Image (cartoon, rainbow, N blue to C red; front, top):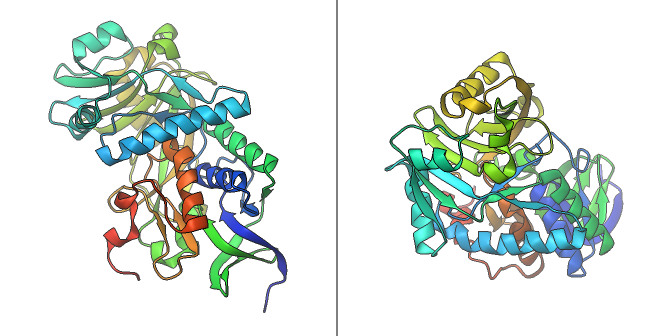
Length: 383
């Protein structure tokens, strides 16, 4: 059966979360005829781009190669919030902490030194003196960087979408995409309603990207994640002006957290929570007592003044690559398909600049940004 063609565009964007909304915005600003398709609402709570706040930080322990992209991301977030007329980026400072030889501390220090980022190295006692909500082990070293903070993910998506609409983009929600296919002169995007033709497509489908792009089926693995909001016993210690965002490596794993903002409670989570992977349509189960116990134990040990009653537990999804770096590339066999980043739980902060990169790849097949770290070729020849 041949699906009815519903329209033709320069670019179709599949997924209107963090990356897809930003790509749609940048494409529309360049005068492209762009259609963006989302299977859920815009914004929604079924993927990776919700939960009120997302960390942004400069001294990137994952790899120094991210730092130039972060510098551009900060500039673009500030441009977006000026255009939107509302604050989207909140600066608190950031803490990257762990034992002296830990990946988090050593990697953050390496990035800070390589790019001459303003920073301080603090021991646990000094950290607690400045920010008394922290109670970390005596052997902990922390890198403090004053430009860290958080973004408002839902509002950022709304701002990107509103900006895209103002520049003529078409955004359609509650329309599930069944396939993205190579076609003469470009691509064909088939949905539950029909088909769309375009010169190129940006596939930014998050946890569902492996279904639409078989080459990514084993490279983009959805994982369940849970976040907690606990009522602090000393709420003044967890206010944004007194509590930098953090990444922390302790014997129990890697954790991250935020001050109280937007809703009640000190927010935090553990990377790779319980290690649960699977089908994105069934993976996003409500939080359980086991989820709560894991997170409350962490807070009681390292942030005791923040470990009051549980106020909220919410699940979301990471989509992880084997090396936990992004995928930002064109399909090896069908270059009209631009593949947008299974971000392995640390991508939201980059959405503004990733949108710019995706627009580059969709319109001219290349970008001036250095994205070599994110090429598909690192995983071997095409499947």
